[in-house]
Amino acid sequence: MIISMKAGASKEQINHVIEKIESYGYTAHPIYGDERVVIGAIGDGRMKDHIQSLESAPGVDSVMPILKPFKLVGRELKKERTCVRVSEDVEIDSAHFVVMAGPCSVESREQLMTTAHAVKSAGARILRGGAFKPRTSPYDFQGLEEEGLKLLAEAREATGLKVVTEVLSDANVSLVADYADILQVGARNMQNFALLKKLGKCDKPVLLKRGMSSTIKEFLLSAEYIVSQGNPNVILCERGIRTFESYTRNTLDLSAVPLLNELSHLPVIIDPSHATGKRSLVIPMAKASVAAGADGLLIEVHPNPEEAFSDGPQSLLPEEFDELMRVVRQYVALENREM
Image (tube, rainbow, N blue to C red):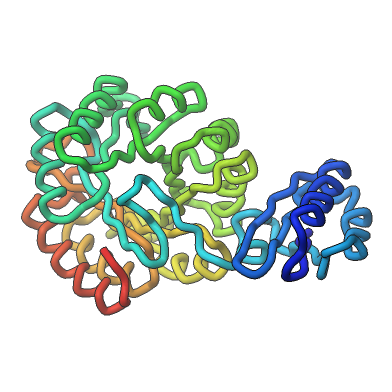
């Protein structure tokens, strides 16, 4: 339910409504706007008549149901777009377009440092790199694990780039959070609910990738798991879905970007590297992502893709990433946004 307070409602009236909501077994989520306060009452619905009765409480303007199943990440409760603040100088929202770039896997200090300095020079703000790698085959490279996390932290110290890396299980959340600035949930883990709940209790932003066969509704409900546990800083990532097409690794669902912007207040970024699986398609899809309304990009870059331990065919060379950044800047400017 959405309880909209009257403009000028007192602090005492607002607190009274919050206390009543919680006394009914619901969780209160107040949103303080410039003119008025809106309070979301999130629960299982058994006491909805009691919530509805709050319409007569002092300072209350209206009480309305939230119709969408995703209560907290939807636009019904919160109209304004969320700004995910990674640091004092790195924000991801509708005004700030951010590029995250780096290798699929952290392989060595030399490989990571070379890539980090290259993407930093080209204008990336966040370094991506996998320390824990979920692979389809158990015989493929699985990542350097904590040693990889240490190398990412060293690269951050050397370049000033913030770090995003994947966490595979709820048991590893604390470890990864000690090193990373953003914790990534991969496509295979989008519905790992134990992991999502643990991330909801973490104080770091979460990059949530869409599952390879997941609907938009399922995607947003996974984000709801994180936000419902207390962490509002979720970034949605469209990385392509599985279809019958075999010429690309996945099918990039660009329509998901404006649709997610309609349905949710969370920022949305695109991963054209995983979405296409082809180096030649990354730059065209990066340009299209800006036009579709994305808030950022996640790009794989490697100094020698032919020798990459994973995802070499879709990784850009540093000079190709330079070109991507050059053309993307032009598109971002056309959208009247900052990069």
